[in-house]
Image (cartoon, rainbow, N blue to C red):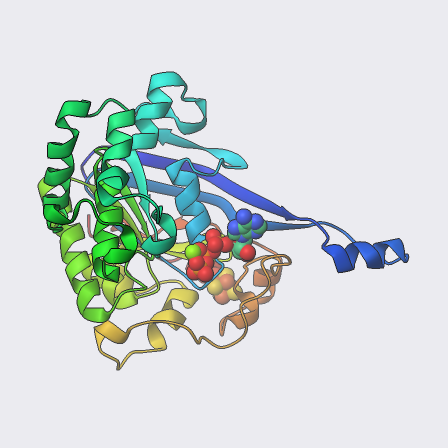
Length: 339
Ligand SMILES: Nc1ncnc2c1ncn2[C@@H]1O[C@H](COP(=O)(O)OP(=O)(O)OP(=O)(O)O)[C@@H](O)[C@H]1O
Ligand code: SF4
Ligand SMILES: [Mg+2]
């Protein structure tokens, strides 16, 4: 991809410490050994996102997709690692630069009902942030809201309504309008269409792609729906228990997945239509993120696991043609000759 880099995560981790709950503390008082647990929700992730790209991020529940999205959006600080933006390292930005970066990256969540303030009218939901941040003057705010509502396919006559007076799809449009109103460059969509009916999902996807085309937006698109990711993403990134295990051009990853986990995900549903390519049932339980397997996290479920997989973590390896995977089987794999 030849466009400039919009964001580059280098060895980014995010840990959560789970403190003992009441029962565990009680057991501790009675003499049992009780420790705090650390979840490596995101574990030394390297990820480069170029301007104008749509990057799909997939992986089973709990693998760290939302946490990574929140860290990139600046909502959660990373525990370690750096995130480079065109303005500098994310955690070191201050003042106006930090503010501009916060506006430039917006997150769109799954459930607009819980992310929109139910007591606010749509005109305020959309108009409040641009007004507060000086993107629009008060006297122009009404016109601005009307323009944003049109942009996201909402009838501006409904600007005095409250979120509950809209359908699910319209509410998601309100959420997208609120994000667009601060003129972002990068949208992180976290299961943004998962709660909607299939026909409405298609409309919202079309809206995302129109916005990409018209406004030059960049997307990180987090989804359980492999069909959607295959359709809209330029690049697909696969996570497993906090780590990226494979990434590459979407066509390559879907045609010739290189990591056994990606192969298992795609194998599960080979005959279903794209629309139904959702993964949920590869063999074996997802190990607890509180106590992930040593070495390659995937080894207890991997049909190709070798002794070294139990102790030695495979690192992402460049396989050529923009594809990378982290698996010991690929240690001697030839690089693809394609550019
Ligand atoms: N605020 C938090 N406090 C403690 N643990 C957390 C917190 N947020 C996430 N986690 C843990 O971090 C891990 C990754 O969670 P995350 O929500 O990022 O996964 P996900 O891939 O988005 O899952 P899903 O597909 O279910 O949305 C999980 O083990 C989760 O329990
Ligand atoms: S490193 Fe080993 S366990 Fe992990 S995916 Fe590759 S073969 Fe399987
Ligand atoms: Mg999530």
